[in-house]
Image 1 (cartoon, rainbow, N blue to C red):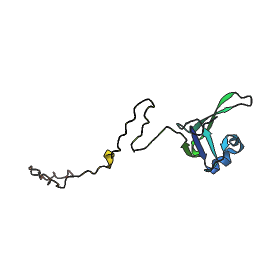
Image 2: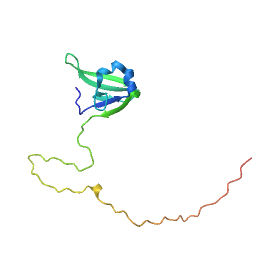
Image 3: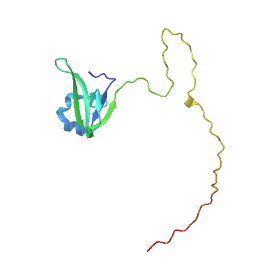
Image 4: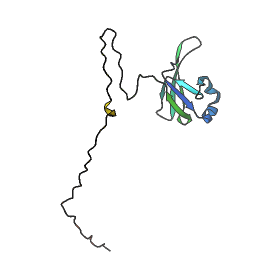
Length: 141
């Protein structure tokens, strides 16, 4: 079955749920955000959105169901993944248990340091070449 930290939640427009009717009901889950389909993988390239749902048959055999719906029926797709830590702060790496622990004082991030811009703005250079002024030839009639 689908692990709650891996996969996608696909939300549909209310009109799409009404149009799909009972055919979509076995695949729907209710949640705090509303009814949605949980799937393991999704392909959004084309007119149809293809969702792969892993499940089990009544006999207990593993089965992968491919559910395809028109792209204009989908309101939103939410990725439910836990790929580790994401962010812009310093990363803390746990030291191996057999290594000697060394305490390192925290340091400021490079992006947190103040940058002093130069105060003097150089004067623009004047082009030493004088512009050429000419008249266009008269229009041919």
